[in-house]
Image (tube, rainbow, N blue to C red; front, side, top):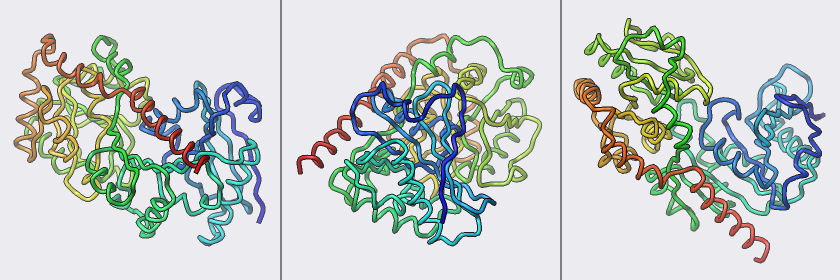
Length: 397
């Protein structure tokens, strides 16, 4: 079985072996993720970007099937970040056992390339622990952002893999209160870190006046959703509300994943604008009367703590959401947040959101005070301290 590496430069080219020389001697991090670094900006990007400012970080992504006759990996460098994304490619006809062996060897090749002997291993998916368990790590972190076993097409072995990872992990983080309650009795060192927000970035929506070209022609009032469109969205609710409010425009910004685009409800006032870059999002938010979270009530949404809740609020616009548990527990007393279930109530909440005075600073002041305690910088600082404590405990027994 052969393995080799291939460098794919995105942005300025640089020598991979010297890319980390300006960083200090903190433990390097290998972050294992089912999400691509350049997919949508979420929790992994916010945290790993901050970690990369004072230590080496590589982002080891889910493997990609290939028609080549050998396993190899690509190193992707992206402009504006010190994080390097590793993309393994494995022949698509190999068995699961062959694939696991190849991924383990590719991981060893990556560690050898960078000269790392005892990194911190950080997992967003338990499935990738199976080929990394042999690594002598300074600490093992499980950042449980979602209950992946409840998602559509989740492999049956995921729950068992999570059990193995929990047995090995030194510290466990959860992406919200519901997940914390679900994991707290399964590990002795679990910490709840709900979704945080880059207030400055999304706050730009409050003063933005330039309308994106593909939204400028859409009639007002506009109500919008930003994020992945998948089985967590209640498509029947979306269709019903659009019928009930034909004079309202409903805008969806984000990629369609795990469901067919043909299944999306269609109407003259429903607009699907596709995926946009993180930098573009405030401009879209600035043109909305309210932001939407039309989540279904199913297994996939049972434990979610949507990052978009504080992002919408930082943009200074009301939020209309179904009654997702973590949104209810975190924002039910927050002005400008409407929590309802059912199409009629959802449509009426959109009406109420339209009547909110955007020039009234009173409700925004309450929101801003709440968000001041939810910055990614603050979350990162607390996580870093816990990771360094885990490393010290491992080093000194």
